[in-house]
Length: 225
Length: 234
Image (cartoon, one colour):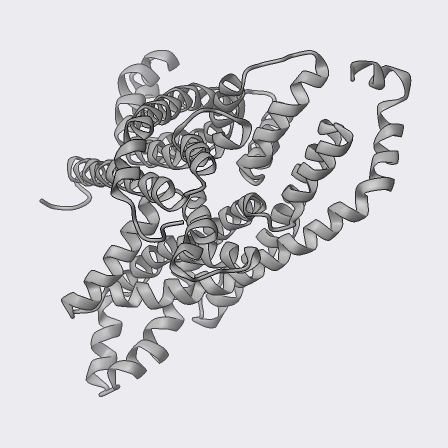
């Protein structure tokens, strides 16, 4: 077997990897969309009038946050069929990623809501605005910019965690690399290509998030231009 | 399988399951703890070194640190792990699974930790540097005696978060054949197909480790560090 880097092999597998990259981006996008919505539910669950419900929700969030995504994936993928619910690997993966990062997202939302100063609420109360109106017109427009950097960070985070989906057989980039590597018994090029593709996608994304963060801080007056 | 749940009480079968496979899972947990401790030591050292390098005035040193941090933060941990285990032998470096796992974890989390250290050093008030300077401390002594003790209360809370993330990430080393808790759970699952029991138990063990061992320990460190610089912490 030839040892060094083989360009012909690289070109041969490149189209396959490019298609798999699209799958990875799709998985990250769908997972992110689910996480955004799930995060809202976890946030609402922490703010109900019932203390017991809040507590249960809090513990659930803690539990999901402090256990590995990998085992959660296995759990959803292998356990649901035991109860007669058979879902495809894609659906399982999206549900798990959505749940896992939803808990992180709920913390981002919570931090952002708490970042809005309390006097804003008092002013709205004094002006006799309804709670919904206060949220819609006063609080959320101020909380949203605070949440943007955190939300962006987790988008990059989800993107970097999608390779885990390959363990339950979702045909994304890493899965394709393992398949190609196993078929040809050459892992050097596929895995290196995966690394390069991840770098080329996630570094610009991370830079964009950092720029967003800076813009937000400037618009909030925390730092000067 | 659903019939299985009906035939016997679920709790009863779960005790039988624990009786049979509990020891295996516990042995896996020991390996997980080993991986955690080794990679924790490695990542703390790496993040200290690269955090300081990132603040260096020398562009070459700073450049090396930046490239390292961007590279390891930009690619996925799983890719790095597989690269260390399956690709490095191509270059004549064959690492044992355990070593490859620890090195990949340490390098990956070291990159995140370096950014925390950098932010911590920048957060030390400028007056402290100036005071140390005016007292004629050597640069090494300035860092060692004045700055480092003060950064601990600042960097420990984010570092605690990162360490919990590290515990979760140790599950990935199972995929490069390290026989840890995740590996054992997967193994038992493929033999018995009692997925709910084995993955549920594994999840619980991870949760207990994080919630009742790792987090209290890190909180204790935070209190200790705060007390050392004379700041009482709640």
